[in-house]
Image (cartoon, rainbow over all chains, first blue to last red; front, side, top):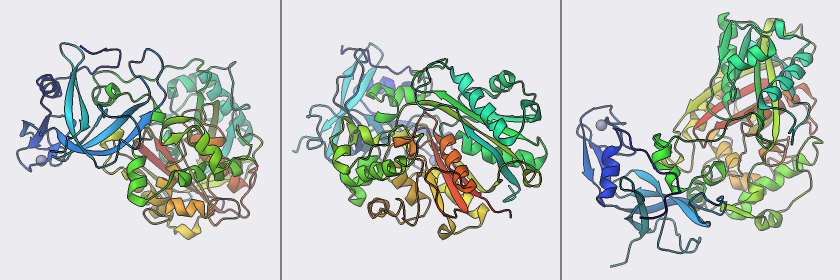
Length: 139
Length: 380
Ligand SMILES: [Zn+2]
């Protein structure tokens, strides 16, 4: 288990499937059965057309780096060691989500906008696994 | 709202700005309110409408001894006071009340008598943003800007210029917290807060307050101060999660609010003599200039660099020094409105000659909400 002083999410009935997914190393998004919109964060209806007929599916876990800051200020005991990136990734399926970019120096040179990234998972408690992203290995 | 049907007849800030460790947040509301009542020649008994954010309107009304027939507790962040002006104008027109007091007070620096910043772990922000280390505005409000800079080729030097020009305005304002001149190198060598934001690109954290009194245009002529008429208003919200903005290079809330205010006022951009854009961080005036339509997409940084918003430029912007140099208690919108009123009364320290129309444009949360108020010193 990783340190857990960072603020951890408390799932709600509407978001539980997402956090169940990260525990199983899956990034679970929702798709509208009526209009095919893929969306995030979770809710049991489509934000584009308001249909309640929506399905959960496992996304690819891949995306690109959309924007970020490198935070240089975090109080001791906050669970964060500056400098660290706070990033927004645009997933290949369309939605964007906040995350941290890991496995790479936390510098502007190493963190290039639009670079391909993939999800990695870190367990913080028995219940909560956070999705981070790292540069996608060129293959 | 009927353009020009309501006027601001009282406006004042707290007696002190900056560090005020001997007053609670509620007392800052009261200090601003009492100064504003004096400015308008009124007492609390003359007030029948109360609007505020940060504290409840119930708490403010009771503390001041006001018995309201209308209240508004809209609290959508730092632009809440723009929304209060809009809602108050509608309420006065509808006859719900005659004399509205809008108060702001915030112990942003000393933190006397105020609650903390919290995001419940089960909220969407608590689940999908806070776990990744967003810690208040400096590490959250700033996240969209790299996308904006990449799209339009905006440089860190240009971002720094926003702070440089505003410091020039602040140098003329005896009440501004920071008045010493700075240049681009000073900004770019100040401490890194959240890349690409340096300390001098981030707002101050201070204590203070301000208040406004509004009444109908017919009654406004009987007050001691020159009336400032509300001729256009707008408001909107987008998302409480910065990560879920539709587009990181433009604010939907800014566009919707700004468009409504311009349409209601029936003015063109060239009619605007003076502009306030809430500047919690140096990128906000750039987004504001573009989203309000004063310049085209991606043109704001050049516009500022070419000194159009500086003294002698065609669009004087943030003439009190702004949140970057004047003061920023947390919910800065009230101070933007105060400066617009001063400019239209002709009493601003850095007075824009013959200003007739001023716009105060506010942001709430991290691009979460917006309010826009168009003011004029000429009756309609
Ligand atoms: Zn749909």
